[in-house]
Length: 185
Image 1 (cartoon, rainbow, N blue to C red):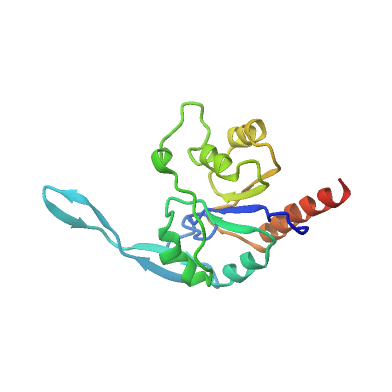
Image 2: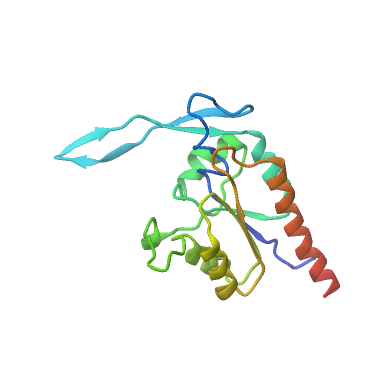
């Protein structure tokens, strides 16, 4: 980006793009490491019930690849700030800002737009952004087009395979197109 111009935001979902949760459970993807995240379910009848740890597959090389992109990274995940505790260290990422979804968290919208979309557009505030996720639809694309003043890329990632080289190329191309349009504008 040119001097004085902020980098575009890269909104990162964890489950799907970074954690290919839909891959065959008995076949960890090559290059990935397994993280077991303990969690406790809600209190039931005054007793704290425990659940099995959550299995998360992460590719440590994704961190370096993300840091080399010309973006300001930002978590856009139900993990919110917990991504800094559990996901970031495995990937070698520094603490990142995160979108606090507040009351929108996991709340289905009657118009079919994903519950993350409105808060992400608000967070971006007109700033260019790319959003990697496995749950966007045409309705989300239409919402961003109608409600976001700047360029936006909604990049779908298959949750069976996670981020691949082609995804990183698409993100780099989008960031590069912003630089080109600014220098020729």
